[in-house]
Each structure stands twice: as structure tokens, then as C-alpha cells.
Length: 345
Ligand code: OGA
Ligand code: NI
Image 1 (cartoon, protein in one colour):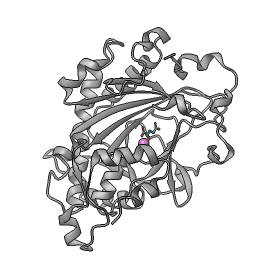
Image 2 (cartoon, rainbow, N blue to C red):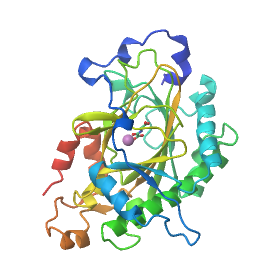
Image 3 (spheres, rainbow, N blue to C red):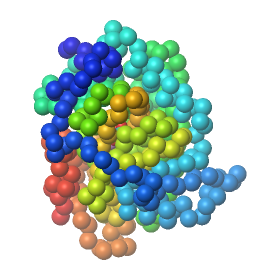
Image 4 (tube, protein in one colour):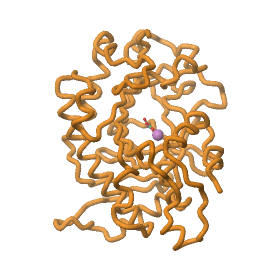
């Protein structure tokens, strides 16, 4: 398959190609300024004994996950240096010459362990393409997956290993707070529910006409929980709330935490999975590094019985295997409501 990566040709075009111009009803429009809106930012500063400096962390995380389906965390303990190196090594990767990147180009082989693609896995059949390239691979357990990662840039594996380990720890911490907040036993989300970890790095080069293009379609994340590391000052991520798109402020060294569909279902609709998308801009390249915690494909998912017993006593969703949900997601994922509806009891 020919290498169509936008990172390889964007510099050669002055105007947006026709097959990147979305119809009127899908174009970005003006989002609401996040600074005019109370977007949730949670300070995870800890004491020396490992306890949180702010006792209200649990309430804040649960409230944000209920009201917004996402929040940002600051002072999370992962060093600025590692975050900068991570963004840096990914920028270097996408800036490599087209021939070098071609080695990793996704050819449609479902067994490929490291996928570099443009717009979506479905590029061939899309009507319009999104203005982005993505590099995706698994990261846990590290030793099983690392041999499939890019060998260039030379420090890619070293930096991304450290990043994967640190982000997994942070995700585990956040999931522990969420399980406590929901009244579930500690470690509830460990094991099969968070067996898989995937890194998916999105690269959005400057776009000649951001008003007509999209970086990523509106979607909810199908997995359990996602954390995103954004470029320090470039806007692009938006969330959908009360019928409106709100820009998510890029905060240096913060992570955006996104509640995935499985957390909404396991929490019996107490937490919400947020609909979000990415738009482009004409001036700066933007990188957004996603870390997805995903159940194993055979994992049985259902509303947590302890939680159901303590609350309504009525489970809102039937039980299913994660792979069934993923399959339905691939078919219906533009229509989040219909997808969840099909699992309702
Ligand atoms: C994702 C995602 C947002 C972004 O990868 O699922 O929502 O800004 N990314 O790249
Ligand atoms: Ni997403």
C-alpha cells in the first residue's frame, strides 16, 4: 500500500485537498473557550507517606467523572523531563524521512504489532480523511511488546519504555481512587479489566484550512480509561457537553483523563464516557499521546454487582465479553447512544 502519511506531504500543499474537506454539518465551528467554563483540574500532589495532600481528591475525581466524563490531573508525579522526551521522540519519529517511516506503514495485516497509519484504519473506504497520522502499539507487558516498536529514533524504545511504566502506575493509582469512590474493593480494576495497555500517538501537522478539516472524528473511547498527554500549548482536543463543543485547555505537563465506555457500564451509568474529537490549526504541529487501558478480549464485563446492590439494585446493562463490545463499536462507533443502548437491559 502506498504511503499516504500526511506528515510526509503536508509541506508540499498550499490548500486543503478535496478529500479532506468535511461536509458543513461536520466542520469544526467555534468551540466554547475553556477558560469561560469550569473544566475540572485535579491536583494529585502527595505527602511523603504516599497519601494525597488534598483529602478531597476522591470526591473531585468522582464528581468530574460524573459531570464531565473527563478531567485533567496536575502534579501527578511523572517528571517533566520524561514528558518532554516522550513528545520529543514522537515528533522526531514523525519527522523522519518518508522512506524511514514506510517500514512501519500499516498494510491492513490485523496481526501487525506496530501500526503507523493515516486518518484511520479504514483509509481505503473513507469518504473524507482526517488530518492526522497515528503510531500505535501495545506496551504491557513491556518485554513481550518492545521488540515490535520502532528502532528509530535510536532512543525511542528507552524513552517510551520509561513512559509506559510510569503512565501505567499513574493509571493504576487513578483507577484505585475511582474504585474506592464507587465503593468497590481496592484493585477492582486490576487483572483482566486492565490487562492490555496501548500507546497511540497522534500527529497533527499545520493544516491549510482548519475550518473545513477534522483531526479526529467525534467518538467515545471504547476501553476502560485513557490518559492523554498533549503538546504543552497547542489547542486541538474538544469535548461534547450539553450539545456544545468545549475546547480542552492544554496545560503544560498535565494529563487529560478520559472515562472510557467500560467504566460507564461497570459503574452502572454513574460515571460518564465523554464524547470528544480533535481539530487542527494552521500554525503549529500538535502531538497528542494516548495511553489506553483495555480489558482482555475475553474479559466478562457487567455493572459491578457490589455497586448495584448498594444503589438501585437494578443493573442497567447486560453482561458481555469485551471483544463483542469492540466489534459492535467498530460498526456503530459514530453513534454512541445506539451502541450503549444495545447493551441496556
Ligand atoms: C484518542 C483521542 C485526542 C487527540 O486517541 O482516542 O481522543 O487530541 N485523541 O488526539
Ligand atoms: Ni479518544
